[in-house]
Length: 171
Image (cartoon, rainbow, N blue to C red; front, side):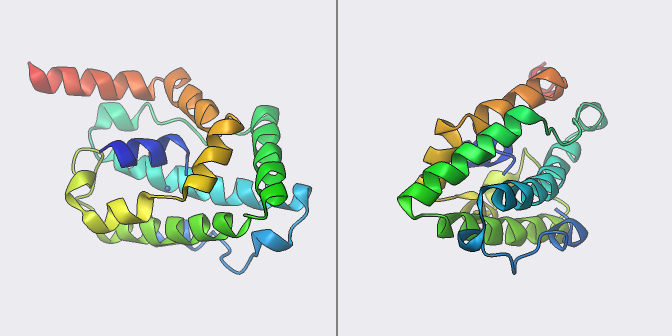
């Protein structure tokens, strides 16, 4: 469950139609900063839409709180920072790997409609696809992307809806 929380918060992921929106032929190692940010936005948006499916399958009250894909200057700054960090370290290839795993995860979720936030921990294949490299995690954390995504989920009321749903289940 912990691994899913990371991936969901990073926006890092469900339908093949969403997965097909991600261009896997793009090589992040060959992009300049602006191109990286543009392409990372496309991947993040498709992944965000796909990952929210897992939340929406919990309950209608949770589905209603799902926010639109967040994108503003703060996200541009975060992705620019990620590019700078990973480019300097020579690790942009890790972003290619994360993108590819995201596509596989999205397809898995679409093919398995019983997968929800509540059941994801029962699917080792899904959990394996949600794990990204320590290098990518460090760049995302260090550049504030995880915080930005978490804030979007809190501000939309999604986290409150999930918390309320769990509280009602405990009653």
